[in-house]
Length: 528
Ligand code: G4P
Image (tube, rainbow, N blue to C red; front, top):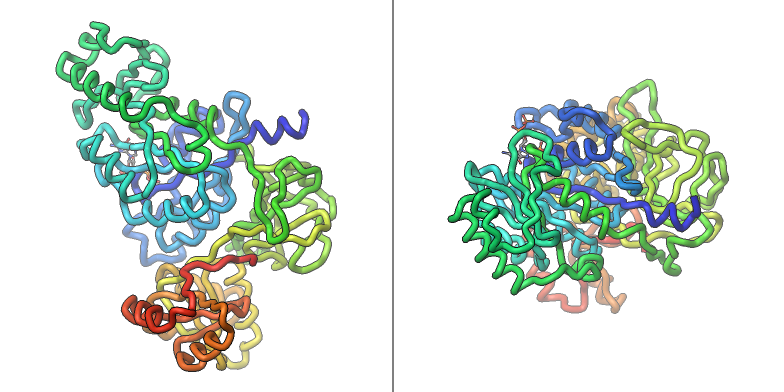
């Protein structure tokens, strides 16, 4: 197949949601349609049940399992779909944020009962920063949820995105009767717990058709007529360009567990979702169709089996062709590397691949050469940009309990933070090491792994900070003065960028007001 065709038949995306909204269930239905699994229930949820939250080893075990589901590739209607998995647990939100840098679009699942939830908000912030194309799936329509119009309004307002309904629900909860496809002008009747087939679809181009009353009853038929008139008047046809630019999100209603409303969405997704795109680097924009290979590492997974210390680095191919055993240039280390056993994940089988194209994700065995954001090329010296680091929310000082193991501790801290498990800061003008994480669980993971993998024993002392903000200024003198006056709150990240650690929002706002020449950033770029 021609190189251009290989690119244009790929769709690389992630399903995101607040835990419990139905991401795993929807993933499973997609895999069923793609023939990647044969029976329902084959995808194990990688979310961590509430009861297990104190058991971090259980979480790491689950993270281990999730390596296998990190990328799920399948073919559907001649399209190669790469579905990138994201951890459900909020303590691993950073992993999810970084995965979003490797996809071209997302499907956001919203629970019709709970509406927009905390995790949804945060994930969508990252999507809007990156102008990612979004499709929304409003799930659990078989339950008594919020009013459909209220829900759309809530999503639009809370997530600052314009919505465009593609299907429209007829009632909800026990009375849920199906959806009307606004694009194809057809009615799909709800059938619980069965695989919906084409026979359930009735073409109703004119809503005054008496068939509608026969199928859903006069009351619901009338309500649908009113709703559709209103929607048609407001929305019209979907403008695909606005979807591609991340300004408008098409919306589907359904019930993932009943496999209802899923196929309509998948078919539309295949039709409109973006193909792999050009990407920015610190030097120039790299065209997806360029001959020469380039790609970047967006996720690193440690192998928890002590017999196999290696890690798996996940590479997103951005241009050219990735080939097994060919030498590529590791830009940060300025050395040439090759991979004899790279693998991909077609039909959920991990298999060694000979080549991969833009949009594909390749798993590379790594013995410590990679960190998040590393770029591989065929010789050119650029870094892919737009890979953000977010402010942690919990900060602790690292106390070395065994001075004989200082070297091991330093190595361990560097490697674990390269994996993106946590962020490492060093007190400005001092030696104090500070670890910043999104969730408490990571501290347990770090403590355990430092001891078992590096022989270093540590303890953590909580620090009273709530956010790390990267500070910059056009006036070097002002920055130097601020750093000196506020030394107790200043640290450096691993790339020696200055960070102000704020005790509270009040302190941060005060410093902002008092120092207008200093800029405080909540995110930093991995590659500048
Ligand atoms: P997540 O990955 O986003 O965390 O959610 P997941 O798919 O695991 O779904 C969360 C719960 O919601 C599951 O129930 C799942 O069965 C249920 N669910 C998913 N889609 C629908 C739907 O369309 N309607 C209804 N009523 N429920 C739905 P659970 O009891 O937590 O887990 P399980 O025991 O069923 O696995």
